[in-house]
Image (cartoon, rainbow, N blue to C red; front, side):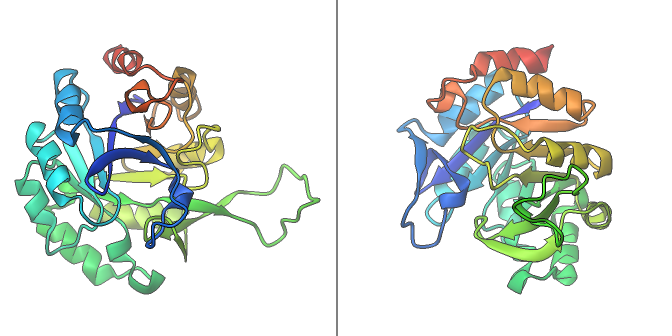
Length: 267
């Protein structure tokens, strides 16, 4: 059944909410919706107290390892961690308290799937402790045009790596999901086009994932109200979990109360 999944997004060691499409290596043009002096551990302890499991600690760039490990230590076995994870350092985070490690860019060097890396990573931590982040952006179809309003055009999404700045030539398809599911326990998929904008979710992506993902999947991007949790539950037949970030009152948002999300999960 659809659940609310919390997050702890880290940038420069602080908990922030960032517009996903503004992330880049230089830091220029970064758009931040929220920043707090509350520690990552404070948020982790809150999630632990309320029994909200499976939250994502995401390290956005360098300078976040200490902050991430503090959150993991505050809620051992209750949080997943991602950002800069490789086969060489993955166990370090499992030992620090992560239930799962989340990986994306490292298995797609030069924009191509490195199956040897993926297999090594899966064997290192175990399939049951690996989450693949297949965050993506919409792409136009070959026959799409600005003046074509046809409802028959099927949406397409390509995987975005390197903090969602690099679009690679691998699409989110049923074949891709079934192939990669052999190596991991869950998928985490941000709709990078709408991430952090609170302008609505990518319903078509949610429905596509519900129909085609053979393993548990969490969607993130664009949720702006408690109704979105109910909506995600409805259009996914309860199969897709939902992350709410910038709209949450915990992160300065006005659209969703954290306590309502807790009640939703308990119900």
